Amino acid sequence: MLDIDFGWIRFDGSSRFGINNKWGLFPSASLAWRISEESFMKSSSEWLSYLKLRVGYGITGNQDGIGEYKSLSLIGAGGAPYYDAETGSWKQSYGIIQNANPNLKWESTSQLNVGVDFSLFDRINGSFEVYRKKTSDLLYTYEVPQPPYLYGTILANVGDLSNKGYELTLNANLMQKTDFSWNTTLTLSHNIQKIEKLSNQTYQTDAIYSGSLHGLPGMSGQYAQVIKEGYAPGSFWGPKSLGLDQNGEVVYENDGEAQYLGNAQPKFNLGFSMDLTYRNFDFQVSTYGMFGQKVLNATAMVLSDPNRLPVNNVTNSSLESGITSNAAYSSYWIEDASFLRLQNVTIGYNINTGKMGIKKCRIYVTGENLFVLTGYSGIDPEVNIDGLDNPGMDVYNYYPKTRTVTFGVNLSF
Image 1 (tube, rainbow, N blue to C red):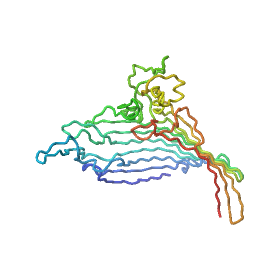
Image 2 (cartoon, helix red, strand yellow):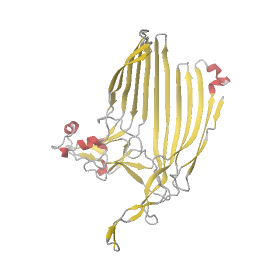
Image 3 (spheres, rainbow, N blue to C red):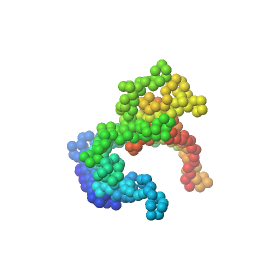
Image 4 (cartoon, rainbow, N blue to C red):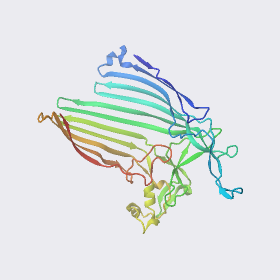
């Protein structure tokens, strides 16, 4: 049986964009085939009770992060003050502080999904989905020549960003008895993100440096990452360390020439939860993890600088390693931040009282963020990995997740 949904066709407009591109067209459609209802599947109905193939495609627009009047030429205070001979006073000069861009338009994201939903033996339900998502016309402020432009930069739509991968979800009713039940859910996903394009014939750039280290001692004007065609956002770029020499100095490959050092995007994401009941007892546990991502431990990089002594503290690990190098960015401080976190554990007991107007009473204890399994040496491996500016960087800016234990009582009257 076929289900066809032509979805919708949105035609959205925004005053934030240029006069040539204030409107955007965003269609979507989907198609599903319930294969299990076909006659040729009847012989498989005992073990395959449900099977559906689905395909979906859609385009969405984005104007978040675009301020007002970004497509217009603006005048503001700037430049050196001048002396007004008529009034005998100094005055502030005004000039162009933003170039007009009549072609400024929506960022658009197109996504194609192909998935299959299934049910096996009336106990295991699942879905497997493959997707490809492409964000086009990414906004970036490009440097432009003067003249013909009156100002040195302009906000323009140029870049393309792609995501492709898969997601698997399995839910199993492992046991269902009168006094006992056991259910589990497993999710697994893999995503590859890549910058496809940064330049066009009008606006050109080889690479955009990101991951600012400004403000750290001895790091003025330095960046840890690069946004570059063919690489993922959050790609670390810099000298590759070969370790420490006998004097405690960091040794670099190829005399410290900058190269690719890995990126902050995880290779796999994993989630697992389990729900058990036995008579009046109930038990729930959930975990999740990210694997294969890199994190720059810039906090350790600064705190391990021997120049901090004796006025300030340094880390025990730096004293034990014997490092004598000044704080300097390299792969020495980039770590594998894979982790598995026990997110939640709850144990409860239901008391059927029937007294004092209380219909039901449940007492429980819940623990959240009880522990993390990781090889990362910093406070917490789960740093921010979103955006383009500084994903995967631990730079004095991360507060660890709180471990909490809660006791409670639920009453039904």
